[in-house]
Image 1: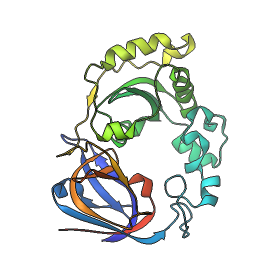
Image 2: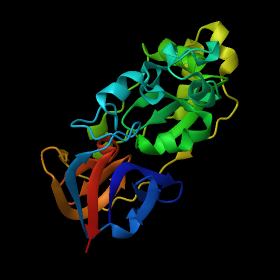
Image 3: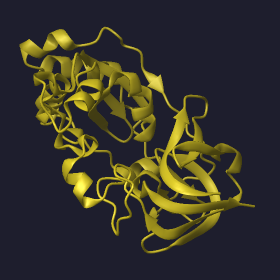
Image 4: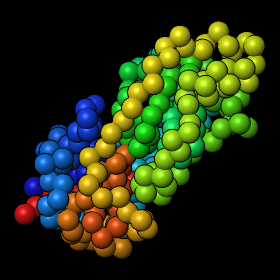
Length: 265
């Protein structure tokens, strides 16, 4: 199979189910290949996910430099939601911003080795948790747009991290003493009074299980830029990472828009 790589499609289950996506279509049920030899070969081409032109480098997960500077999918509020202006009718593309950012969002707490605070569109909450490799997660607040969620996240950055430690996540280093319901109560008390009305009544804690036979003891990151042909026995999948049995890991999402050929034994 040959095509442009995109982040893996995920669906909730015990364990999570993954599909490799090429040319915007799910092509391979990856869970069935765990324990088998797979090969991903980069053709040397990167095609911008926005304008479809060939680019020497990928910026912001799949864009050429021009589109990275202008496309709404790469706007600064993707990383920093408190900068979003969609609720004011402003942005790089007003229609796109309205459809994606001027929509219900959630602020969540996700647990692995520590508790992380994050923001995502309400309709993709579960997918976001899976993509980050969280072991457990809970909704903290529900807002009407991305800006409001971003303001809450900023208010909590002094108390919680907003970054995932990807190496610890891939080693499956979990803190089993974390209680997300207790954390939610503690964090609610840290919010300014005008933000507490957004706190969600949904106290469900979601547990996520990943299809991994063997976690690496020492994570060895690999990429197509340094190794155009990546081959090995697939030991598992977590977040958007393929884990090989020799402790190499490949971040699929990082290589969005790379043209690859995929095969397996």
